[in-house]
Image (tube, rainbow, N blue to C red; front, side, top):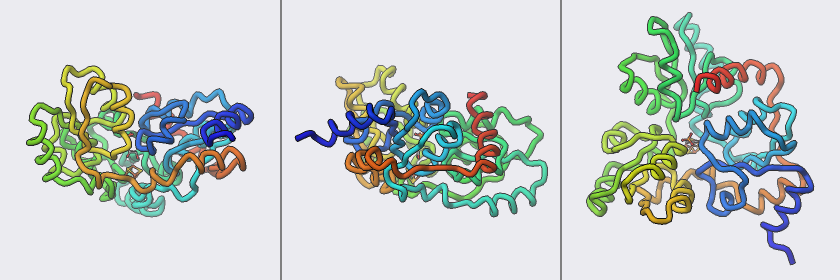
Amino acid sequence: MKSIEEKIQDLKRERGAIIIAHNYQPDEVQAIADFTGDSLELSRKAAELDEEVVVFCGVHFMAETAAILSPEKTILLPDPFAGCPMADMITAEQLRAKKAEHPGAVAITYVNSSAETKAECDLCCTSSNAIAIVESVPADQEIIFVPDTHLGHYVQEKLGREMIIWDGYCPTHSRIRDVDILREKSAHPNAVVMAHPECPLNIRELADELLSTGQMCAFAKESDATEFIVATEIGLLYRLRNENPGKKFYAVSDRAVCPNMKKIDVEKVLWALEDMQHRVVVPEEIANKARRSITAMLELS
Ligand code: 13P
Ligand code: SF4
């Protein structure tokens, strides 16, 4: 009898499909993926797909971004309930009200947002290019930054540039405590602390490096250091360990688990290919507007 993984490979060929996965996906899903990456890498991949069918192993806004960039392709999200609570912390209506309070402000949204929110924005960004995207806005223009307060404040501190920042946050990164980092630092005094900019200020202050998940992978590979404390969702450890067998990686907290990322498993990937479900489609009018902010980001980074 064929294993689930073998059935997936057969069906993938039959359907002309590709499986792409975010760095926070469960190990077993990353193991069967054709491409794994951070939000920016996944957006780039989604913009240049050869395959007709994409099984997107991640959360809803990521599949939506792929559907916006490649509307002619079939984008499947194996679990339709895999959402991102941070993305749901702002609605397009709330953003419109904020824009009305600040006419002329440039609206920038973190990619962790709905298609409707992106459609209301001038620019999109990810954690790996947020600084460059904000820097691209002329200094005399006001900026509204949504929805992540921590990423927004990180960019604001880095550039010394005031922004109007929404108060959304990632519940998973908010579970990381300073005592977790201090404990790991005293256990591994030579380790470099890599933290994600979605972490709150008290965690960012304890980090040696603030990096997106893709940047963490590149940094760990290039660094002379051999030990790393990783302050982000624990799924990233799979890739870090696979790509750097001679180096040691310590998860800062086993509470840093994104339950939505973990809704995807290999069975659901198989069912997605068997039944061609759950298709993510963005209404054309919204997609056309949202595409402008994402394409502007891809051109700038
Ligand atoms: P990156 O992979 O872009 O670092 O984003 C992290 C994240 O929280 C995605 O939801
Ligand atoms: Fe959203 Fe945080 Fe999960 Fe990323 S890790 S999908 S920001 S809840």
